[in-house]
Image (tube, rainbow, N blue to C red; front, side, top):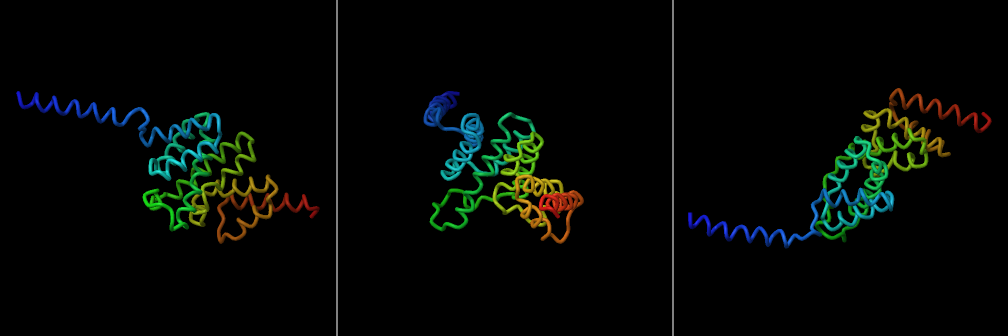
Length: 210
């Protein structure tokens, strides 16, 4: 018992020292990502993106956790969720720099494995919510966000509604040629994407007097 008390007398102070060493400024990964979420209240998606990039570059967070939280916020209908999703998608663009730049410091997450279809789903979900609110400019900026790494035929074939909405938004924003071209190059279109293509081509011809 005496030995146990001696051990306890050593362990407890050590635990206190560790807690003090961490201090109030030492946050968990989840806490830092939540801070980025809260930053959208005043600074919008740009503030969230900047904070996520900085924390990622310092090895404090992973994009995987940021993506997961963004999905959770959208599903919960949180008021800042769409802006935060945009921030996450924008922040992911730093990966394109990391992949290309051999001088990026080691340990900044260059080798982080990203589930790109999950990124695509985040872009589609956030874009659809913005479109439903008739925030077309915002929706267009989200619907194809988060780099082009998830935008392949396999993804589009599995996500017909997202494919259709992407071209519809481009068309509504005056980018009809791009809206049509991205669908025409596909060997196979889903039902909704085909309907979107037919509608866009018809409206575009009418607008040009055809």
